[in-house]
Image (tube, rainbow, N blue to C red):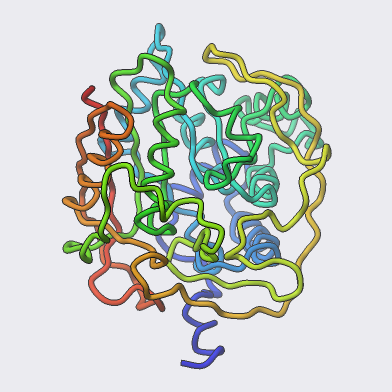
Length: 376
């Protein structure tokens, strides 16, 4: 397969036909007229593609969220909307923040929502996607969008830029001990078995102290029969935070990544633009359900070079992204439970097969909706 065949696999020119939930969200939340949606989405995709060239962007996967009928989603909304709820939700790997806007559109108080992603450019583009950037005329925004916009003006922020695999990342401290519900879609299948354990243990530290009913839910790519689990012993951290682990993140919802060859390798764990006061981050975070703090506005993210290089993940057990079935995902959370003195129950629902054979996946891969329920 040459580079042009590869490009055709990960880039789809036309909008998909099955994006009614997203178009409805844009009409309700952003007050975007229906006849402007197609051109708007193409403009957003072009901007995102110039920043991060992955199949998630190229194949429009950022337009898909959790269906409102999913039982885990319904449970999360119910808990978050309860009048006396102390639940707060973290959207892990939030990208453009579409899941947060969906929850807000379904009536969840914004003070109970927060997103985190390693790429500030994607968070920034999300304000363009949903037309709720601070410089939009307030009169042109829906009531929900006005709340987001006012928070962008300094009353608070809904996003933290953080790298879950970087122990020194200051953003991680802001996320510790504040949540009871975590949404993570198009996420787990980006990482190796060992990285998934490291991340899952870190997620437990993000739960509010004393939480007994945490919910972690979302969608990812999985198999009906997973590959053999790499050898692992409780307490063995030799594969984590290794200085020679070049595949720190596969950084792509299809176990396949593109890297811009001039300044940023997608396998590197650093952001394409350096951290600075102009990049929005939370300076303080309260222990209540509100995350209000003053933040500086996002700066414009410069476009990266248009040339791309293709890189496939390693085929060794240590560096290959691990795709789960129910048993392997339960085993992972059993290991996490041993390390954190918690217990978890995993449920998975297999949806459709992936719509294209993408490099690095092999055959028989499915979209999977999952829930991880804390039982102790």
